Figure (cartoon, one colour):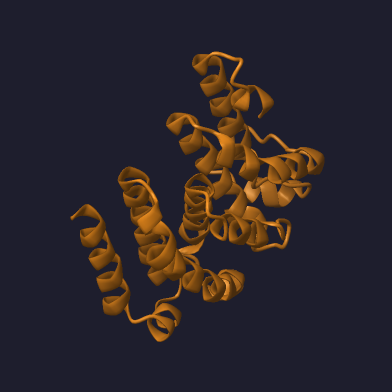
Length: 211
């Protein structure tokens, strides 16, 4: 991770390091139970690599900050894939309690870079659970009740102060979160924010900013 975020390295070196990190986290789902590990394989000949809990903890601790401070789109995209994978396997099992408070802190800043990072990570969280069923979504449902008022505030109070390009990209990410959240728990979203009014608000704000 240090190599991929160190600006003293060439972009090629940083990109390659980020790719290696993404490939490494392909094995995130495997744990200490070898029988469960084998059940997760598509083919019996597939390789199983066990990522130590120390390594997992280190990645969880640093990935959000590194992704937030990165300025290279290709590297950020790779980081987001890593975050998606970690959220899918660790958030629902309680191994990443810092995730929700960290997203909330990012969204509550006045810095568009941090806001964009917060929205992007939130999208990865909703995306990870949009096709899940059962109790896996419960924590995310609780988080959405906190995040949607914040997103609404961002649309109404913060975005008008941003540059057009940054604002438009944040709007797109908020729309991504909204659409993905409908798949996570349609009834919940409909009950708290009627779809038509929320989309109308987003589109109206976009038109005003572009006009």
